[in-house]
Image (cartoon, rainbow, N blue to C red; front, side):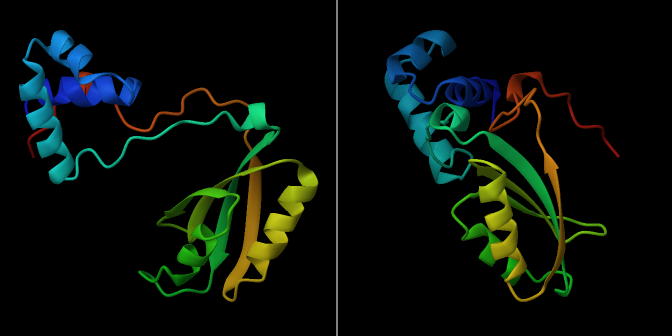
Length: 156
């Protein structure tokens, strides 16, 4: 992935609806060359999909929470995580290292809906306990890092 690929990815991360023509203009390439690069980035899995970002608060879903989940699963097993991921109000499920098994991010309408979610999570066999943290403000929420401004990796 060269500098032009990084520029293309960064532009798409900022606005997935940007036109091929606008990308070409900003990276100083012909639109056909940009399209060829985008197809390569898609085929190699760098670009996974193009998506809309929703403001859940505008829809009345005011509570954004992180839930730590402790399970009795063996290390490397993710069956419970897959069941958590199937719950409709859960946005993200992270299989993590440490004293907890998963960190889940969910968006719910209110405390009653949160209580219902925690009850449903607790009914999944193997879920031992949960701890919920209410997100008060989101200071940064990006789908990707800015590839143009990442420091170079250190040689080891």
